[in-house]
Length: 509
Image 1: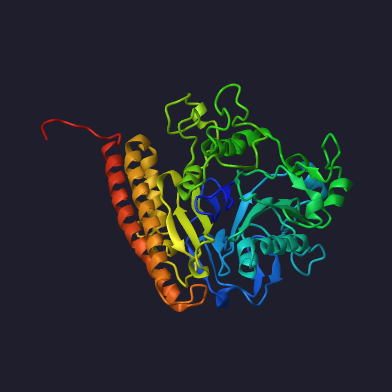
Image 2 (image 1 turned 90 degrees about the horizontal axis):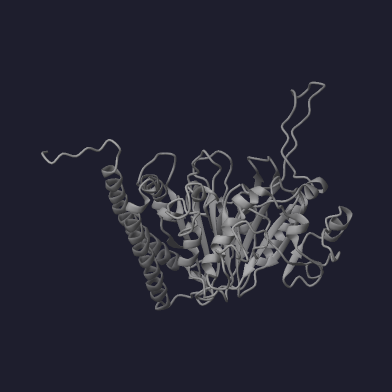
């Protein structure tokens, strides 16, 4: 399992934006080279076939233009992961989550089954396609939705029709709402609207902890679900609440997991993020703390103590239990405690996308996809306007050739060199992050202001003059980013070289 998600409602964010962020982490033992691209309507498939599950479907004929951040070299399909379409709707997919044996016994995953024998033989059994999964979801959903709510409805219908072969959670956002959908077994699902004044923390675990089934099957103001979810609960004895209430319940109890693995891999990450965003609301660290890294009742949604910024989100997604006994780079605790829990900012992160929909900006430059590539404690964010036709080569060109010419590989090299000399390297990395983020905010501010001064219709998403201005801003951002990243790589290489184990010094050279 991999990935960590942080969602921020519009009244909880620093500028009234809806914000969705997710680290995409790869399985252990592999690189996953990523690139940021724009998919034009003419390049969107009309018939889709999954590489992993072989599921096939016809897609609608009127796709929207959208960004995504697909695999660059793996042969396992697109894996678009995160993007924003020309209707200013964002999607992140997926957060791998958990479920329990009772759910899977009632509604198993729809797994791909290979053909058995040779066609024409008496014992031949043709292959059976699996369901949909992370490889597919952005491609088959994001180009066809014009609101976050529509995203839930479309994906929900696809899950009911095709099923899924894995447990996933998916986020949708527009300028007004964020919705979070979680799968339940092979075909069932539920979704909840993120409260506007709250943030949501999601490690790899079924997360929603309050659900109103009556609303989901009725007015759908704050909840949605598969049409037969009530019967599914009743028929399969999934209601484990003491009071027997099946209309208002905790889905973690009905559908989720509660394992020892969760307490090492999942719950500590939610604890760290909420400890940072609500440091004074409760005691986090004493033996009498209300919530510990291994608590099963850490809230899904919570009001922050102050408005959440882009930098706050990045800090959380960098997280390695900074300044706690569990920090692998720290000096608190013991050697055992410092490697006790799975960090958020892990070595195998491929990319982080922070999807920001700004309600105060005109439609044509409302959306920004903040992108970081590689291991987050050592990298930075670059803000990219998404209403464009192309993205800079520095972000879009990486392949399996290791070279600092591309941001992905430059960050991989910096992280690998700095990891063994974290304390010596941290000052250089902190300066780099501060400088590049400051420049990013300034570039957005100046570009916004320049667009407002034009006589263009700023709500026209297809104005090529606006596209050009946004593409120039993105390129300017990447030109400066490459310069700063190259300088950081040089500094970190020097620091690491001077601390090599074969070093030896004499005063008489």
